[in-house]
Image (cartoon, rainbow, N blue to C red; front, side):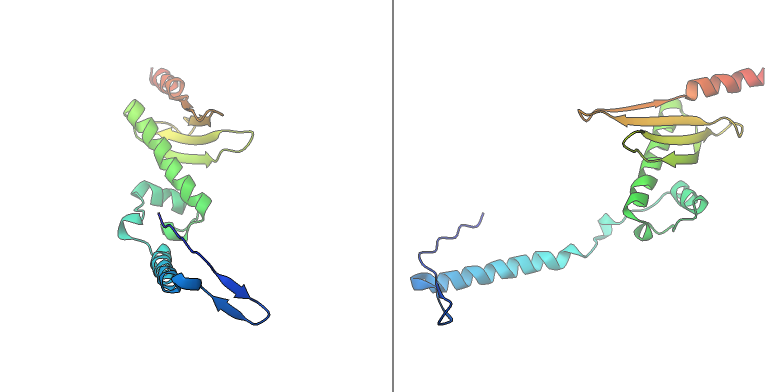
Length: 161
C-alpha cells in the first residue's frame, strides 16, 4: 500500500508556476519511485515466461491440422486457443470415464441458445458411431457434462452379435 500525504501543491496556470510546498523533496522522491516501480512492471507485461508457454499434445496438433489451422499455439486466435483446450479436456473426460480412446470428429462452442458440444468416435467404433458430449453451465455457475456413449457402446455390442 502506498500512502501519500501532501500538505500543499500550488499550481498557477497564468504564471505557469508549480510549487510543491515544504515537502517537495519527499514528493519528488515518491513520484520517482512510483515511476520506477510501474515502469519495471509494465516492461515485463509483454514478455512470456517459459512456464507460460502452452505445449500442445499430438492429438491437439492433429486436430488443428484436420481443421486447417496453425499448429503453433501462439498463432491461434483467442477463441481457437480456448477451443483446442476445451476439445482436449472433453476427450480426456470421455477417456477417463469409460477407459476407451476417442478421436475428434467436431466441436461447437457454446452460444446463447446452445451448450458446448463435442462429437467424438470411440477407438473401435464405425464411421457412424458418434458420441456426443454436452457441457452446460447453469446461471449459478454449476457445470454438468453428459454424453451418449452407453447407447453407442450398446449399439456396437449388438452389432457384433
